[in-house]
Image (cartoon, rainbow, N blue to C red; front, side):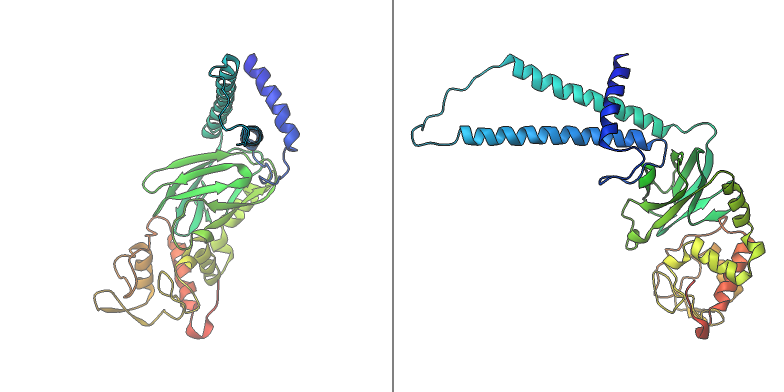
Length: 338
């Protein structure tokens, strides 16, 4: 009963600080079911910090004036050695504040860590430097699409280094670690598009590792997923390959305008000889491109490191064919972006 009274009291205080659901100077809009509790605790800790900062600064100022050195008072005055009321106050009040912060912090942690049993599950993979989101039907997208007012559980892993998935508007952030799965969940409460970041420095293009969360209105998510999943049937192979080039993060390492990046450019490469590590050379044909996608460490182009991850089991045959057709279309005379 006492805990409920304290929770109602402090919730009333926090509601006066911020109109719930609206952005503030400190935080973006609240668009998930856990955002309110996270924001409340943030403002409570901020308020406590401000109050104690002011108390310390004011008392320090008073002491500086009252106990400053004076010509007529060279010896310090006798100071009290014991004050029971003061000692109890500076012990009990901070303890009570710490207990309140721990209680609501732990309660919020349990809420954020425990997804509902009926949550919609999406697999997330982070790699330098893009995100990919795999849906239950096998479709993979570079942005996270979710239905509104439905809990979503993210099962996350990394293909290379540690990343951290962070959606400020949802108040969720969780590390994405290679070799294991981590989890996060949320329930979006407002339709719209929100930014998704990597919050763990992961290399030179870390700041480019940005995606979007698209929250669909009721009934529209299923329509979008069905249409998006059939893009190989509705687009030409070249256009589908261009889409996959963007969705799968190929543009992070391979340019299509002749510029060398982490990996060699794809512009005008088809049908030409390339030099490999070890001194051999090979003609870039369909077999070479397919092998480079599935076994990238076999034929590494001279001057580049074997850092490309394998797409074995991550690309269907139709998707591989589309990517090959797109690369074949990138002739020297027909260079262009995706």
